[in-house]
View (cartoon, rainbow, N blue to C red):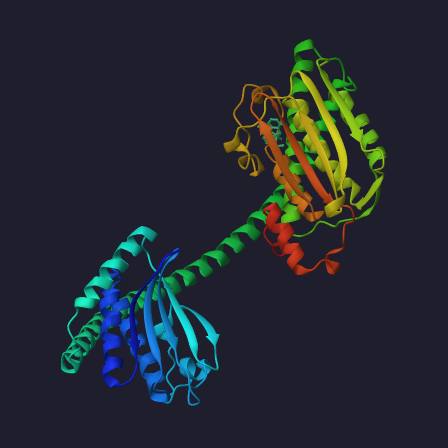
Length: 464
Ligand code: ADP
């Protein structure tokens, strides 16, 4: 580390204070500092020198350059009974003005308050070598510098003042322009907000209408669909007489189509009910083993392809959780039936594991099926979305299963996560709290967080 002293001034009279100011400005300029910084350093040196000189005749001020790190140093030194504390010098001077604006990027080391010794340091944006080179050049230039002429110094100060005022004026004009622009933008934003509010109200109304429409329509569809299925069943059972082979095929097609429509209507009704906030959660203790055994019984028969295995695994120590069993089972059924639809070879593994840290249970359904492309990962949670693939035309589906699952998961205070690689398979994970908490005991913040995670908006007003 090299320290080069550029200048030492003993402050014995007003002329010395002026000289200190003049030299400080000159040094700042030679060090390549900006014009505003040059004025600031000159003013700071003057203020400090003047303050020390007012109280003692033995004050000195030194300017130096340190190379590691490159820094400009102002060292002040004053002894004597009349020397005020730095607190007074820096903050509460006679005029009451504070030196802080001048000190902006200086660090201050108060070596002794009693003897008033302080080192002020300002980092320089120069390399150590260049700082050293400039410091040596400055020392030479200063030895050749002419004596300070007080009149010339005042002329110089006036010039600086005029320049500062000019810069200030330009700044003020720029600020005024900026303010005007900001006001215009502000007005625009306020207008946009008003429009947004209106749109939000319209959207809420449209959403409530959609929910009402879906729920009414679905009810209207249910009865005739029930009749079609029952009548088709009667015909197929030959209760009304024999059928030709062709007739039997046609009636079976009618029955199949009616069953698909019933699934669609049921999904729509479920979604409409959730959106209208008309779904009750009935929590209870759910035995995971029993749930898995029921799912195996229900979905095992759908496994028509002996190249695919369906396995259930539950961590040994994991027994139960407190939630709504029907809704949990509905979500897992949907995951598993999707996995069955989109897996031609390999295995489907249904697992339950505890995440102790978060008091959550994770139910995952992993398959070795066709997988889902990254871009489609969010789309599949939108209503009526099915991804184009070569299996889609051979499988049944409404595109409502996953949106429904996401809504149900949110109602159970949980969330759904999907990992998938096209051609390798997918894992759908349902993460539920170990213990469902009735909404009254859930803080609004927690509920909002849960809803946000699940992409759920606040429930619309219940349909009449
Ligand atoms: P659908 O009744 O059509 O199965 P879902 O909402 O349950 O409706 O699923 C939407 C779409 O997401 C499916 O049509 C399918 O394209 C894709 N998908 C869902 N699960 C899987 C999976 N396990 N593997 C591959 N694609 C899947």
